[in-house]
Image (cartoon, rainbow, N blue to C red; front, top):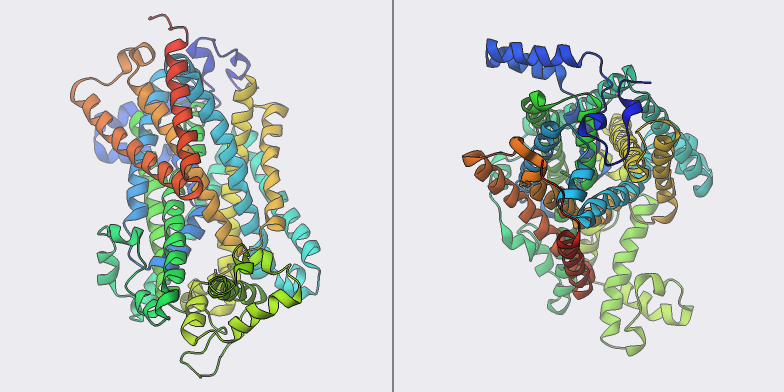
Amino acid sequence: MTPNENQQGSPGAPAKEQVMHVNPRIEKDRQMILDAQKQGKGALFKVFAKLSGPGWLQSGITLGGGSLSSSLYLGVLVGFCFMWLQPLAMILGVIMLSAIAYVTLSIGDRPLRGINEHVSPVLGWGWLFASMMANLVWSLPQFALGTAALRQNLLPGLIGTASGMGEVQSKMIAGAIFLAICLTVTLTYSAGGKGVKIFEIMIKTVVSIIVLSFIGVVVKLSLEGKIIWGEILSGLIPDLSLFNKPTDKIMPHINNVAENFRPFWTNMIVGQQRDVMISAAATAVGINMTFLLPYSMLRKGWDKYFRGLAIFDLSTGLFIPFIIATGCVVIASSSQFHSVPAPGLVADEPGGQITGEPTKKLRGAYNDLLIARALTELKAEDDAYVNVTVDIYKDLPPAMQAPVMGKIEALPWADRRMAAMLVKRDAFDLADTLAPLTGKVVAQYLFGIGVIGMAMSAATMLMTINGLCFCELLGRPPKGWTQKFGSLMVCVGALGPFFWKDAAPYLAVPTSVFAMVLLPIAYFAFFLLMNQKTFMGKNMPTGGKRILWNLLMALASGAAAFGSVWSLWSKLRWLGIVLLVTFIVLCIVVHFARKKPKTA
């Protein structure tokens, strides 16, 4: 048993009993920081670099399948136009994570009890349950990506489409392999002590390999003159008009379509753009990351003397790898896929020859787009098709399918080209982002390893966080079978590959939109907690520092709230707004109705 783990008492236990020290060298680390502060910034930098850790764990989550998929599809849909989005989202995220670190390390206590007692139990328990929901939902794309990488990139001849094995059996074997890897790594972290250090080294290694791989792609494309850096730099300037229209590179292709069907393609593209934009912002910092950070710091035994290290750790271990990795992925995917039809689906010009052979899944997705376009035209002519969707169409009798097939056969080349541009690429197709650096064959393996690494690091961190959440929910110390059972709950993600029909990487987009809805719960909880004198005591910032903290937190929380409201409105309309208002009112009512804590 590690020091103080036997002191995890009830939520009302003194703060000192809540600290989860498992690092016997904590006093030595604290003294190293104090000595380095006297020697100057250079010495302090070396010490911070040596002691960093929790920030890299945050990278293990944020540089998972969600960030990879969002960045890839962001490049596919909007090119370089939103190069500013992910850096801005991460800056705001680091602001709030720094505030969370400040609060946690100042008090030395698990923050849930503080939020419940000093802000609102609705907000506190909402933070806990929302984090658990995010863990479970986010597990779906990680398992889908890991399984797809094994089947399509790494082992296609053994358990993939080229093996002759049934799809369900293939997915079961690939899913079992991926799950076994994740469970092994998660148990390493749960072991504590050296297990934590080994886990952190593994995460740092995986993140570094991913970042270096995509840097290599961008360098190679730059040397070949296939990247125009002026366009990339212009993408760092926000263009908010793209929230309501396609990019300049796609608009000429839409204008080639018959005028009465341009809105069909425009609305589809704008809807996908919005979802991917929200996804890209949400994957920068998720609500489950806000839960992990306090506990990972307390587990290492950090206190208020480590607050500077915490901010350094977030800046180097989280911000820098994220910006470099996602930026390079966007650049690579944009240079190869934006406004470019998928090969093998449509000719380069009307009446031309179709070259290449698309994958079965790519062909299926392309056909679905053509069906949707044909149904749009048929609905204007025949009321019998008004409520028919693509999924419903597939179950229609042949007599009702025939008119749709006739419309598809008559579709102009311009519509077919639009469908080929918008088809969702799968893991096999997206591996071509690395082809300029390695060639197509090696690219499949390198991309597959990268995806496995990202999905594995994210899935294992989701398991770890859920274990912490479950222990906190039951008021138990973060160890033993309680933590293990909480971690195993995330195994539900293994069902993802069986219930998701579209391209596996794209599953990360709708799950990210869901995660964005929940994020403001954590942001406002810590925003309010930072300003609670009854909780922070003498550690609460004062004067100019308090003004600066509040301005930065207000900016980050406001941006998260905007993303949440936008997501709710785009998906649920007024029902979403009613649910949001109800939650806010409940938080306020319970805050004023609860028993006020006694001041120290």
